[in-house]
Amino acid sequence: MTAFVVRRILVNIIVFILIGIGVFLLVRAAPGDPVRMMIRPEDLQEGSEAFIQGRREELGLNDPILVQYARWFLDALTGDLGSSFISRQPVSGLLAERLGPTILLMSTALGISLLIAIPLGTVAAIRRNTSVDYAAAALSLGVISIPSFFLGIVAIYVFSLQLGWLPSSGMSTPGGGGGTDVLQHLIMPAAILGLAGAGPLTRYVRGSLIDELSADYVRTAEAKGGSPARVVTRHALRNSLIPLITIIMINIPQMLAGAVVLEQVFAWPGMGQLAVRAVTQQDYPVIVGFALYVAALVLICNLIADIAYAIVDPRVKVS
Image 1 (tube, rainbow, N blue to C red):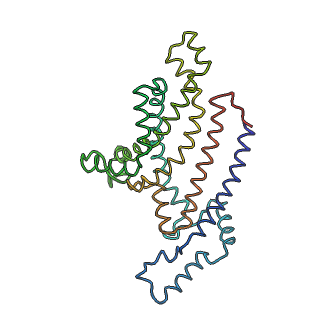
Image 2: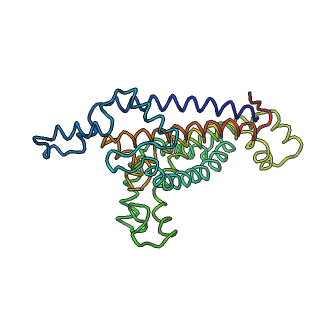
Image 3: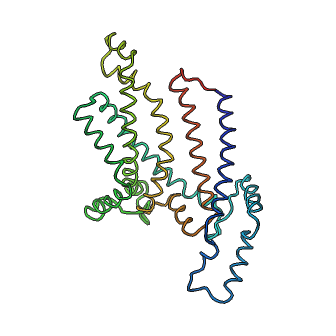
């Protein structure tokens, strides 16, 4: 196991470096000039071109692309991802400030997804081809089909504007009530993001459990007098966790994509909101830093999934 983990980490490091090269080159190749984005068109006047060229020289944007990458890579090895073109603040600090709210939103949403998907998928598998199964399928397909930003807008209209139960935006009220206030702001975005993730997870739980329930060892356990609940929970459901672990790990980066959208809808101060703003302003260092955070998340999730295989089922051999 140790040798396998070391090999996978080394491979992930190589992949991470290649992703960093690709993202850096693609961002620099994008049309537009980030320095010109800092100046409003109505403010352009005689002398502006000299200022733009001077600012580009200051930021190193006039250097050859390979020189720019080499300088950025050497700084990145020390943890320095550069400074924002707009705010002049270190990118690492900007992302670190936004990382906590995004993790809070995603972890809560993932917990909601599992609390919905595992019981609902299990019941649908046990009662397959019944009204319960059809209702679960309709709910799953419904939340998959409806865009999360639309659900967010509807939730704001109903629960904030009409009923006044929950705040409509932000992470906390200025001068608010601490943890309770944060929880009230968290409910709507986390519930919507969790509901969106529960749809596909429910279908995977159902399909995987149906396959396990038709296996020989399940019939053997039933023939030995095991109760249906014990057979499902102690045998079939445990073995159906292997494909589910893969889907959960894949779902985490997808959930981050959904969080980017919902952070805009609910003005949640996370990394997604920062990334969208950086794209509109062509803030290269922030865009590259955010992409590297996402790449690291994907690689870590894949590594965790591989390790979890061997933990959940000792029959799985790692090599």
